Length: 259
Length: 307
Image 1 (cartoon, each protein chain N blue to C red):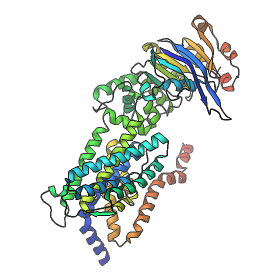
Image 2 (image 1 turned 180 degrees about the vertical axis):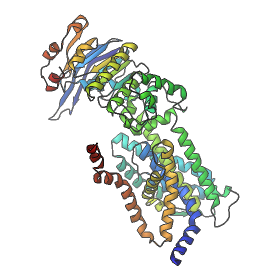
Image 3 (image 1 turned 90 degrees about the horizontal axis):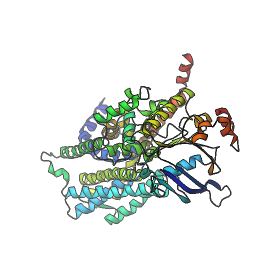
């Protein structure tokens, strides 16, 4: 499904502050797998996600999605295969547009956009139904501008937008980190339900070790731009927060707090 | 009393002429609004695209080309100019305003090259305004009808476009380019096409203006941008910008109101040289208003405490 082959990316190459973001990183994820990516700040988690989505060009290495080499493909072309939820609720939605318009944008992610009317009765009805799953009342606010929603509502909307149309690959970039604990829980539960129901191949970056233990079929720990540890199958079922934290070379306060 | 009467008489006397002029210039305001509000791409190209359309139209009219073809060619030339501005910004990561300044500066030379001299009289050439039968000398009904009709067509076409799947995608590029890209929208294509279309409208306005006034001049664009911006601000203040239809209506309403205001000021005896200062101050005030309101008012905070 997803295949990253010795991806390498260096920032500020040849300068004093040269930084190796991805150091020959290789990773493969089978169809339907739910991978949780952990690692300290600067380990290369975001760089990896950006490389997969196309926002970050690689110096060398390859990225394959469903067997197709997408290394040279721009972001908007890769979007037909993958969906992404950003950490910042502001980044994943168009603030000055309505809830329904945002749903429309995501709905047409993998299709060719035509000159036919965008929002029609059929689509509005389906958006209403899909939003009602969240239980946040967004289904009655289809004509509300997104900037009038709370951060949690926006992130929930981003999630529904991302999982709609069953993308080949779902990328979640610390998507509950900016939310209050209760909303984070709602969004997380909705994520797990959607991923399980649609059998989505998912890669989730998180700093929350409890999430890494509770969810997903595999834990991938990154360090200094490469995969340090992979925990799968039986071992994943038995792993604890303490085990995971033990592997961190640098224990940041944030991780300890999260545990 | 006599003064006020004089002012009103001369204001009312030139009202239809001003209306005709404002309907033609509404296309420039539209050309400023589309990049600024729909694409979040503050663009200055119109200051060069307006005379570009005028020069192209002037040369073609002088060569005996049909007036409608002139407008179509001017539209295409403006489109190309806008595309260049957007490309300069996207490819070389140059700020949108700087890209616009570069383009309008270069267009000045291009406009001179196109015409071969700084102004060209096309008085007596056929114009699109000749096709309206019931024209009376002194009352520019034909200009109002033609420009009004074109404005109506442009408004309807844009309104329908921005409700389509493609149109929604273009708006998303303005609202949040990162998100648009992640939703499979080609940001480059939308930006280049959108800014190109906007400049095309500005150039069409120039072409209409040349046919209306009977001459083309390389300096005809001087100050058109600040006037257009002022008109847009008035339009948005009057009709609002909350919905697509209001946002699209604002340039037309704004142009009509703004140019009537200008003509009123002139009728009231304001010296024409002061006009730009007044317009500039007005635009400044409109742009500063939100920040003035914010800095003056910790009112919401106080209210929150009271609760």
